[in-house]
Image (cartoon, rainbow, N blue to C red; front, side, top):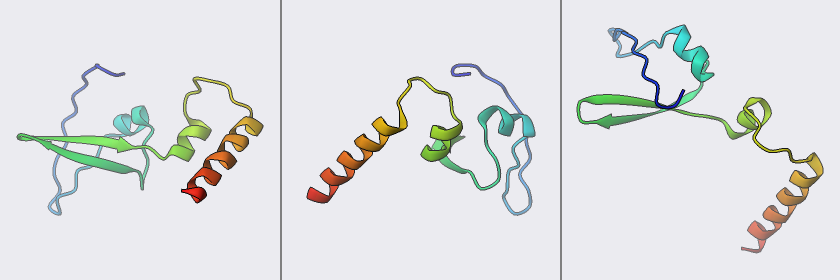
Length: 85
């Protein structure tokens, strides 16, 4: 979807809320409570999803296979390094 351009027309509510169309939410995997970064680029408003790393790990696309034991070993090593500073 990167690089593609789809335009939706939305309205601003009296309280300043913008409601995103269901199709946008579905395409981006967003739901109530998801965080978005808001950037101002001149007179443009750009919203960028902030995905939860744990949810991405569990439900997102997989690019490499790592056994749980390998991940746990890496995690324990990293945590020990953080404690040692």
